[in-house]
Every structure is written in structure tokens, then in C-alpha cells.
Image (cartoon, rainbow, N blue to C red):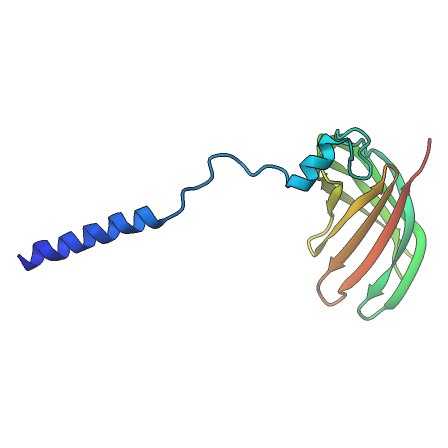
Length: 162
């Protein structure tokens, strides 16, 4: 009889636990209410004049300023991001920049842009650049990399006109 009592208590525990859990959502989360409201009223994020995915292909140039461990502070106006391919929210390209040793470096990157204009660039194994479009032809990026030559900097770009 004791054996049946223990089995009964285990079954009741299992049933009770299942009844107290929250059901998973049946639909994916919608846009935040204020973002959805702004889009419905025609108030689109910077760089998105009609709520569609912005075309960000082009040559972007501008200021880079920051700090590198072991090298110190630096600043220059010679950074170039060439966004050469775009498919929906995803994009790719290459960049060229000058380090404190005065040499020019080149890297390929992959990236994505959100419906709200936020951007991420992946270009190294040590860090990422994240930022946002501040207008149809302007971008601000923050970059951080770890390691012995850890660095942090900001880049402010404008798209060159053809």
C-alpha cells in the first residue's frame, strides 16, 4: 500500500508541475509598440525614408578616433568602408584603415542592419563593430577588441556621393 501511495504522490507532483508552467508563445514577438506605432504613422528610423530596407551599398569614409593598449590614443580621417554587396538586411564588403604604425590595413567584413537602423560588422576574430545609421548617408560605429593589443574606438562615416 505504501508503494501505491508513493507512486500516487509522484503522479500528482508531475501533473501539478505541468499545470503551473507557462505555455510557450504561439507567435513570434511583434515589434515594440512604439516602433510599430511610429512606422504606422510614417515616422521611420534614420536612413529609412519609407520603412523599407535601406540600400547601404557605397563607399563610406570618415573619422576614426580611439585608444589601443600599448600604443595610446590615435585619430585620423582616412578610414574607408566599402559596402559592395547587400541582400535584404545582410551586407558584405571590405575596409581599409591606418593604424598608429602608419601602415594601411585591409579586411573583409560581413554585416547586418536591423529594421531600426542598428548595424553590426564582423571583421576579425577578436571583436565587432556595432552602431547605427544616423541618416540616409551617415553611420556611427563603436568597435572593441580584446587581447594584448585591446582597443576601443568610434568611427563616424558619411557615404560618398557618386
